[in-house]
Image (cartoon, rainbow, N blue to C red; front, top):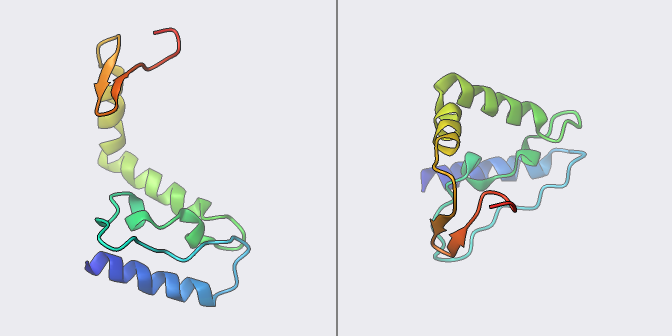
Length: 99
């Protein structure tokens, strides 16, 4: 929960600054589990600096993923998956229309 409190404090600080990007306030539905996305679910638009729309923060996060090798591990998993349909919790899925 400390992570969510940090995000709320950050959003409160961002809303007081003037930014060219619209960032809606961060909200969670009561009883909803905390987000697993980057920045606790907070949009990179919230990190807008001088009109970059959060691109600098997103680029920095991407470079960190590359440095840690996590992005490559996910890419390898996808590339080495067998061809054909995949079973998801919603049913059978395909990687491309041709499949």
